[in-house]
Length: 221
Image (cartoon, rainbow, N blue to C red):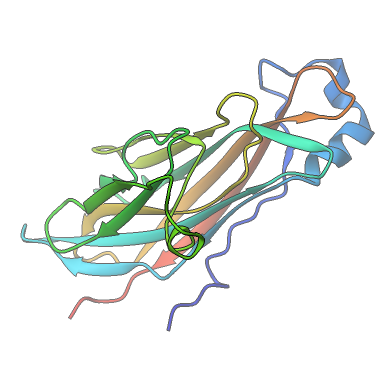
């Protein structure tokens, strides 16, 4: 059974004082309290381990769910998730899903892993005249998504609001990585960044949260 609670990652958000947006308005305590009231979190199912065709390495399949939920007086403009696996020597990201930008056109994204170093990803446009029942079955995403990290030790997902629409994120992400076959756990450094606009305040507020987690790995059959 998947252990959802163990791999929750929801670091407290603080104002990113190193951001280019950091100016005197961000040091006000009332603004800091408002910033902390926004939510950026990652929910993880248990990592699945597969034997690789290359001797001495295994493949881990890492299912994630990203949530960005603003305070009622705020709106997210963008959010970034960085998952760093480089604490394990030899770890390398081999694929991410979704791996392309998704903008204002709703689509259904199906991701499967069969074998090898890649996901099988199908992106099917959601037809506008679908019935309500049919639409409920679709994975429809309106934010723009950009990803990177294949071939590196860390992955990055960027969610960006489209036009004037508010950004609310609640969606699955998938990561595939190779690790040495002797690896029994993978330390992960998670960084969540975002930018929110707040009612009555000029500009935007930069947010950051960091957390370290350990991903336990089972020995593949």
